[in-house]
Image (tube, rainbow, N blue to C red; front, top):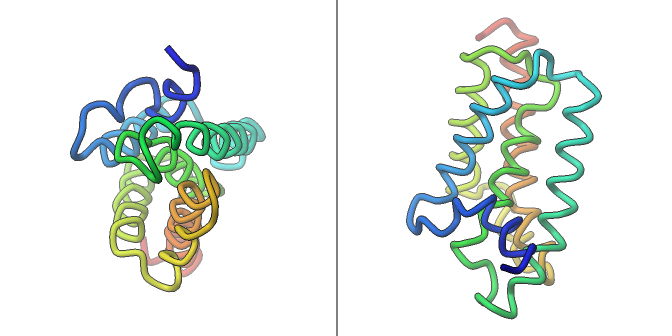
Length: 149
């Protein structure tokens, strides 16, 4: 099996078909909750960067097999979920809020998120989810710092 297919499908989650992106983001959220104790741990930055870089590379490489932005490619949801959790306290409530907000922004794609999909190769596949993660993170940061949540 091609390593890019393994990466792009997030160890096979993308093969499940419809809903694979949501499952990949949920698995990422659960693993984050189980592994990390702080959203400021240097390891979270390394993991997020590695997932994003590998995702850009692998999603670009699998285009030749599956076409542009195939539903099998779910590493973008994993990267976006990671971004949404940076600098956020690692608690079940915050992780769930990050998941819901990330999926909302990823599905609705407001505020120019959709424009990033037009970038070439893996960049277009990954950056819309990374930007959705940034939006989710900013909103969570506001909630946390304004003591709304």
